[in-house]
Amino acid sequence: MKIVFPSLLISLTSLISCAQNNPVENKTNATNKNNSMTSENTITGVTDTATFANGCFWCTEAIFEELKGVISATSGYTGGQTENPTYKEVCTGETGHAECLQIIYDPSVISFDELLEVFWETHDPTTLNRQGADVGTQYRSGIFYHNQEQKEKAEKYKAELDKSGAFPRPIVTEITAFSKFYPAENYHQQYFENNENNNPYCKVVIRPKLDKFRKVFKDKLKTTN
Image 1: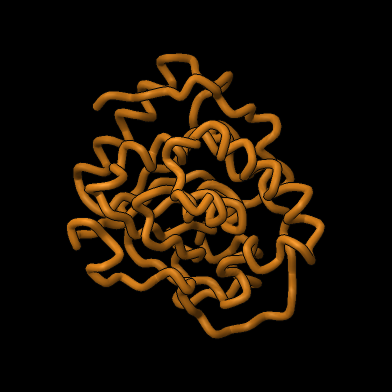
Image 2 (image 1 turned 60 degrees about the vertical axis):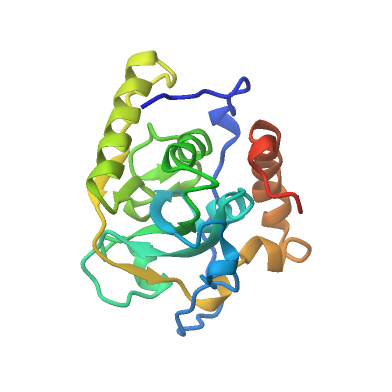
């Protein structure tokens, strides 16, 4: 597997993930409005799935949904033992679940390798059970692979990054077989898009992170961005 590093590495110290928020719960689980997987969404009509946990899903959704070839990016929970968990339950750290993103993509447009590159470079994979100010197992770094090929690529990429010294500390990213994904509540979906102008946190935390991502990965963005 060839690993390509962009010329500009995002500063890890500036990648502070979204702070925990507790709005009124909408307990109806739903996928986001882009989760329409018809053949017209892709060039080949063939899709694949990637599941990543890399901090607050408000931030990660805003990033991955801008990539060419990504059909949908749905915020949710995975990796735990509680069925149909709510946000409040996941925030206790007792469900075993991590906040994650379920990505449906067209592999003829964007590869799993390219998604991994974005994953590694838009969060700090060396901090155990935390991203910035967000602390708890629900904010752990994780790749939940869907097949043997994804597993091998994730493990190789992690090993080569550690060997290269790309990060000042060892990578602690969990690489685990995918089991089940639970979409987060409605108000979490498209969070940045729906709250950019009325939630200061979107402006203070998510916007700067998104701007850095756009500069590094400008050649991989959808034309609308």
